[in-house]
Length: 76
Image (cartoon, rainbow, N blue to C red; front, side, top):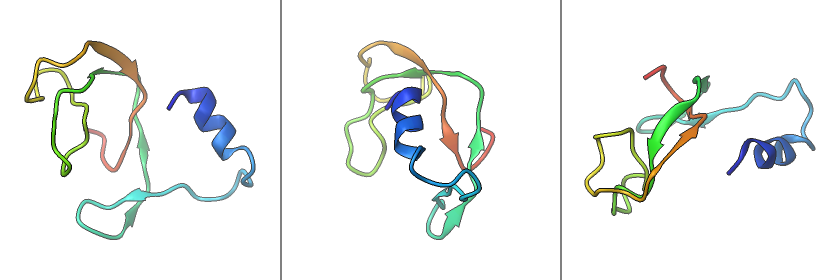
């Protein structure tokens, strides 16, 4: 998803509506919007984990890096 796609997806909702992310093991959390972050693409092959990782934390060599804004439960 790109920033433009996220803006379009959120456009129908009122500006004061809360945004949440899944909690670590349950519940919901307020997200922390991080600064642009380097991400390695397609480094993890597992249904349990997401497919992308921070540099050096994936299991595979990956398919290149991108700069992404990460919505997270913590300020990592």
